[in-house]
Image (cartoon, rainbow, N blue to C red):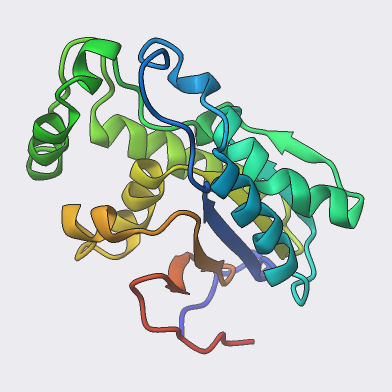
Length: 207
């Protein structure tokens, strides 16, 4: 078991439920407005179902990417509980240019083999991962006594978060993520670990 350095008190356990957004609209007209893409009708239904699925979980706070599809995914949950949603810009999806999105599959494959690769006008996987981890560390600092926070974000960014703690997470894992998807992280007072979620075997939490 790990212990904090002498003279430092142990932080309380913080649970983070990462939520990949539900299905968003696609097609012509959204190439230059990716940030604004809303949920599809099926995505809205899934968001309402997600709010019901999470009923057994007590939540300290709800955070979201400012992108419409992530925010709309957790709005039914927030309304159901009478809670506010705090936007964190660093939870936005990995930045890509409209030109890159036209051939995104080939760029995505290359970025998973080389984290420092990015097409022109886009963000590298390493840079996206670093800002996502900064957001997690911000939450850790904001809740020193622990709690459980829900964090709505995006598939590519969540995959990069998970890879930071589970190096086996790869492109195939990313492509297999459903819409929406849930992943459970825990900070035990010393460091982060993945406790479970789609594609992982659930691990019993240690009190």
